[in-house]
Image (cartoon, rainbow, N blue to C red; front, side):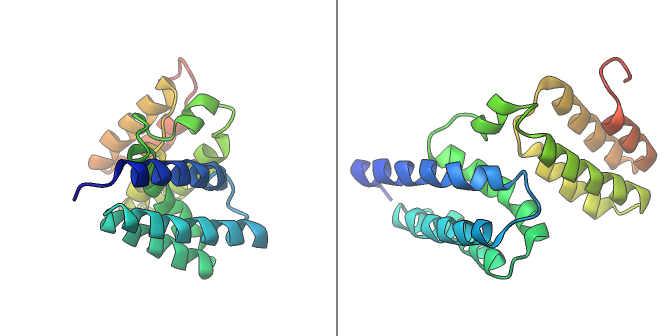
Length: 178
């Protein structure tokens, strides 16, 4: 389905506005009522925008995220939203996912790294491979500096072999440790 260029331009503007609100929410797992309100408004708006330009799968994802916001299911939101943010960036014509986070990393993204690293560490201590995969998938959805990218890659490789203790060591290593 060919999309009218003017409609695409408007959609891109709306997506970029939504990204300005949604991306910062990823670094906080303690949302206020105002955060939930804004999140619901913008995911609802994205549902409409994406449907209007013929992206039904992305619109459905926005709808699912909107419902999660209404239920205030922060854990599932933080698990699923990075992929949605990446899709919005691609749709808006940005070549690399989450350029705002990449530009701010490491100062703008430590909270995301910290939250997901803690989830991954707990998953490793409890030998929960699915939870570990989920935490790694969230981390992998962002543009990180080279050192963090390497840690994620190494952790994924170790997870294939269920080397849970080694994953924690990799994530907690600093330059020169690994």
